[in-house]
Length: 151
Image (tube, rainbow, N blue to C red; front, side, top):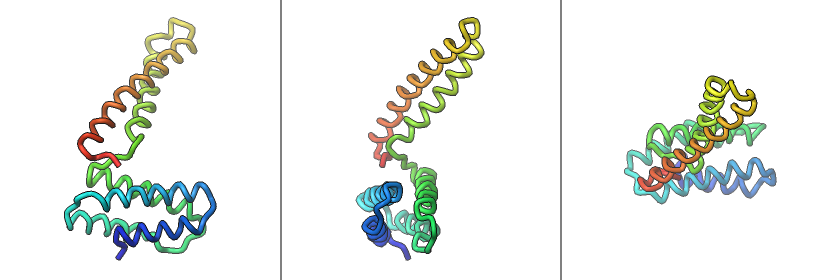
């Protein structure tokens, strides 16, 4: 059974064995998340659920491309924590806000500002859309932090 402590030790060991920056980033992200989870006052059933998910990720299997394997496992684990515990990660809303804001701005620029020079209207709307997305996302991220759902 992969406990939170065992998983932290496992990633600490992997961290000490590699010099690749891409692998180091993934391992540090896992350690940060697991340490944060360990410091929270989670119920025993919640901890068991998280440990079951860690087992399902099959982290201790041998693989050829560690960065790719653990990167996917990290994304899957983040999705699990978001779906089951409503935990989000720093920058989640910002990335979402920039993407959605730019998309909405692009559409708005194409539809409504096509009378201006097309590229000018689109670029103005993308800029305002991204800025709006960042403002809204910052607010949502501060709300998540205040409620204790930000890792």
